[in-house]
Image 1 (tube, rainbow, N blue to C red):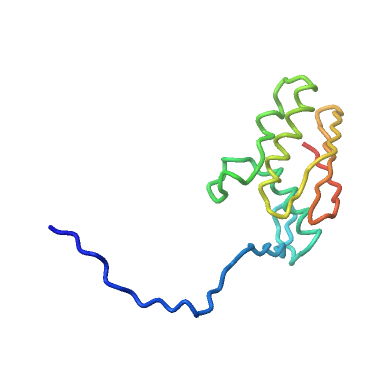
Image 2 (cartoon, rainbow, N blue to C red):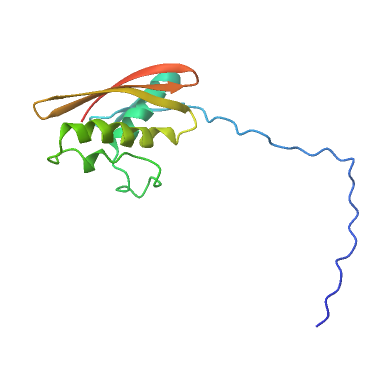
Length: 141
């Protein structure tokens, strides 16, 4: 079978072509959740929605729920409840929380971790930069 050249195509170079050069940031408008009970209570947006995303991403175990892709969630459960020294927790908790949040295009930076242990609870406080705004966060794990 012989190869034949493609037929000539008439191309008009004067046509306007739409070029997308930058992706739009998705809105943060979402359902308000009571993370303790899972009850939906209205609609939230802006800073409140970002705070909810941060808490939900940290409190959701990564790789355990097929509804989420492998980027979503946190691997804190691998550390919590284990008999590990506080020094290890102080290095690993910031790493896994940062990995849980930084993939989101809205999150610019995660920093300033302070971890304290009281009885069986770990209190983690840190800051998240979103569009130049610093959002203080506190999580009990």
